[in-house]
Length: 84
Image: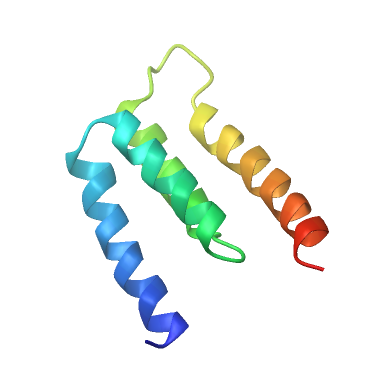
C-alpha cells in the first residue's frame, strides 16, 4: 500500500479514536503512530484537538500540544540516531 494512502487512512482512524474513545486510548494510539511513522506531524493536530476537547480552561490551555511537540522532537532525535 502507498505510504501516503496509509497515512490518510490512519489520520481518519485516529480522528475517530480521539473524538470517541477515552483519553488514554487516544494517547496510546498517538504514541504508537508517532513511533511507527518517520515523521508523524499529525500528532500536533490531534494534540490541539485533544486540548480543545478535554482541557480545563483554568490550567495552561495547550498542555497536550506542548507535550506532543516535545515528544515529537525527542522521537525524531532518537530515530535519527537509531536509523543511520
